Image (cartoon, rainbow, N blue to C red; front, top):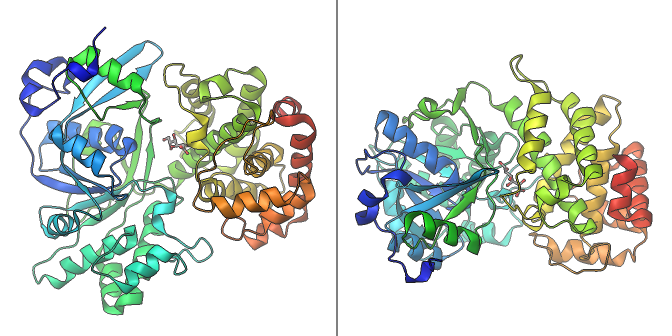
Length: 496
Ligand code: CS2
């Protein structure tokens, strides 16, 4: 048994001995061409790998500067001690594959490294700024799509625009540098988060923030900066001790920042990069004119059922996605939800087979090696419920079709907000609106009607036109009563 703690640290001098864990023995250290905001596990197991492969296939200076926005100096230091190196552990039913990734060249932690970040963002060699900052990182007012002026962090950035802390604040300050530099060219801004129309959504947030400060700058951004949309897909759980152990055995170095993920990956990108891009298309990414159908399919089929599994599991006592999906009534429910309620809302290119997509998702969920925790997916429901479930319900209502299972998922989220499972086990709620949502849920004293009325009043989540639909309210109340009377497992059995 190797103990990771006793091994030497993973550094670039070790690479010659790690050939079997590299994508290729060839490698020329690239200059930094991408700044990535939100250097979490997802980026490191997805875009960073595609980018390294693209450089291997076609060259280019697309080294990555990763930025943590939560002041996580521990993460910065761990990765910088390893000179940006880290391992990706692909966990499939047939074992683990460990790859050491070299594309990450620098890690900065905001707000500590503000000067270094803005120097980097002013460098014309940086041609893309990409983001995985989760839904809440956009500081978006869901009612208008503009930057949320009542968000205290946004107010801070508007008052101190040269010391920004938020994503819109940082992007606008960086674009202002490019605008003020006579030779400056803008970089392309690439949202890689699970938002509908993520490029357009980010553009609106950034332009509305800039307009508060300087309308001429806002006009320049609107006219000159590209915000392509993307659909990103790979299931990437949080790192656990198991990864350190797997990596220590495989590479015999100590990696303080390994990332687990599933073998599957997909990336569909709107091809609008005026300042150039890596040859992602040479390594499996699909570059298309319109991402919308792929994005909606992924948000509704994958993320929608992921959230459904997460909330029903938090109530019904399944810890991981594979445990939940191997419970036959749950699998039946998710299968039926995708087939009968979600797929009919999607209009896909002729070559896209939605039944095959559904079956592949069910197989990915069943991956026993991944241990994707339901509590991780249950986080930030206030941000996730609208694009993943409510938009689909609205489409079903428009088409005059039923949405019994979709609404069960919304009801499960409402019950989840009480803070305990059906058997009384307590858990933490992690959400930007957590205290308000929890207080509303508790104030209902387990009365389904009161719970529904309290939570439907939260306008950041439920648009007024949806809550005005009697069919929606009736179906939601029925689902809440079912969960209250039968528990999550009973409700799953009833609606499978
Ligand atoms: C998940 C996603 O945590 C969540 O909310 O639904 O992170 C999901 O694993 C990815 O979008 C898959 O690409």
